[in-house]
Length: 195
Ligand code: GTP
Ligand code: MG
Image 1 (tube, rainbow, N blue to C red):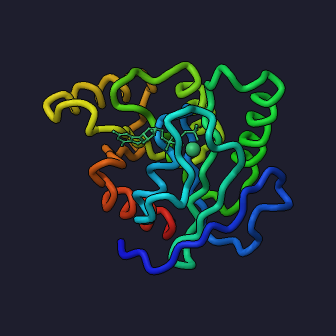
Image 2 (image 1 turned 90 degrees about the vertical axis):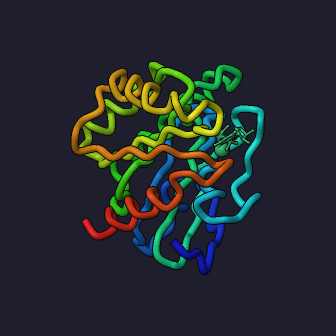
């Protein structure tokens, strides 16, 4: 997709700060350090707009990026980062749960998983939770550049199996390093906007 315009809109902590223009939203969920912010940068072709870090726990709010004045990508704090305090983890959890359970413009959650590893317990919980609330999900296996191409299939299969991936769900193989999967993911997003 051709990116003509990207705007960082807000770092929100409370629902009253979420945008009110009702444009379709696509939220990114996944473990800390899995590459959510990097994926946004690759999708919008702006290297440093979403802040990334080799240290987990970089993203701490719901960060809204408006793309081509037509869609929001919403960057989430990662889960499973042990060094975040218990109180803060609970606060993240509540913020994310509130958002996911009653955010009307939310069209789909992109569940980002490191292709090198089996999904964590938290990944499986998140997936089950999304299914329970009937929120459309696209599983994105990222960091594909980190393993040889010959192993992609085997890893993707194992991840899908561990999640209990359902037939109707979408999946994209991705790399923020090489741009693999970028067009496929935009296609899925654009399709989902129409649903
Ligand atoms: P939190 O905000 O802490 O939840 O992390 P995040 O999921 O936003 O991860 P972030 O995008 O900050 O990336 C974490 C690290 O992984 C950075 O060092 C990135 O450069 C690296 N990384 C992310 N995606 C890829 C990828 O596709 N390939 C490779 N090789 N490295 C990646
Ligand atoms: Mg981040």
